Length: 575
Image 1 (cartoon, rainbow, N blue to C red):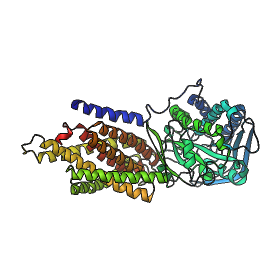
Image 2 (image 1 turned 90 degrees about the vertical axis):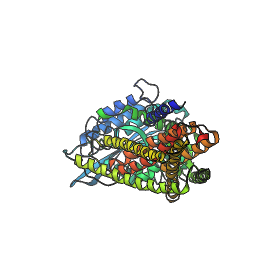
Image 3 (image 1 turned 135 degrees about the horizontal axis):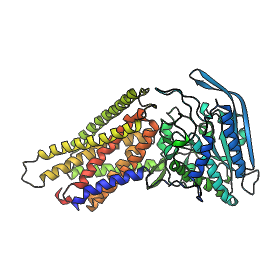
Image 4 (image 1 turned 120 degrees about the vertical axis):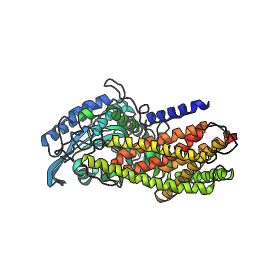
């Protein structure tokens, strides 16, 4: 069995990556003749919408898109389709250019068949204007075609309504579709209808806003309303969920806003977006040739089930049903799905984990596998190295920006580096190789220190103890950081999940002598790390690569000694 362990470890790593990046877990794009949600049908709408630039600066092209949407909504059988006009709006300055324009929001209503004045509605929102002109590093000014931003949102909504109408006899609630104008110039279309025609929202109990910050990758539920406890229960109906409550915290510090920003404090809702990659966002690369039907299908896999649950479950007839005082802490792990906790539940989970870790750590010290002083010293070393990795990550970002002629913003959004993803992947692989090499070097040094021993098991025990010290030194650091973050922010999954998996695995390993617990922990940590760090890198861009690299380093410093303990060629009795 020993000789197969390296192969098992390698296969586990590869499978975790394939699962995390959606090669097996995301839904397959469905063709135009599919009975269910079809990305191919959405693509047909996007092809029409994104044929020309249609920002607030292109009056005729924007009017053509608007007319197409009115016709599509009418063709779907909307009871009413209205166009709200707001005159002489003034947009923000764009390199000393100020756009003055009229905005036109399109609203369609699909009530249940037995409609009454008391009906509650869900509102599906997307904007149909594309991004206006934007200067790019070493390029002329570019204009977006709006294929992803927000052709994805418009097309997904049209297909969702089309599918939902098949079960209209079962509806207890209705649908309102709002296609806003002038979102790209400060959400002015949504602001105008919210301020001037508030009655449109009077019977709305849920808002789903569908956006896109890039054309590919999974669709992320990246923001919810304050008091999202019941909203997240509803999101549990989604297939292939992909969300982290931490992204709402991160998003609040970013300079991006959506139509959902205008209403989220008043109406329960969810905000979806594909987030890869930043170099397609608001540029001429956002065109029909770059759309991803697999990404579009993932939108549908989440939005349609949530929509059908809301329409057919009579509990949502109460417009205020989804309003709540409490927020949840939630995250997804590829293959395992959505984990959703109330703040109290998550705090209790962490307290139990902290106690369990301290007990396991104390047991290791008492049994002599770990020296307390050595583990604490290793914690400090790992912390210092993590800070160094953070600095090196930002140096990589700075060098890449300098090569591409892009503006560097430490820990900020950096655009205009066409090779940014390649640079981050290559740097992460190099980081992993260096970490393994350094670990092996110091492990050999620990073994050489007992090379004169007469006992055959001395070298193995020395290697094992080095692995234990490295593992528990890193876990103790994660324990401290987890405790600080949970009490400061209420969010700590980047450290909590590795700490939880490794602690439980080591406990079960010592109780059963089965190494499968170690490989299970490695698999779970990898699934989380691949998925979460990818989302973080895409959201924050290469400008914050230092933070992503630092978190990756911390994960590696758990994964490497766990892998070493899994592969060491000895039985537990000889340790």
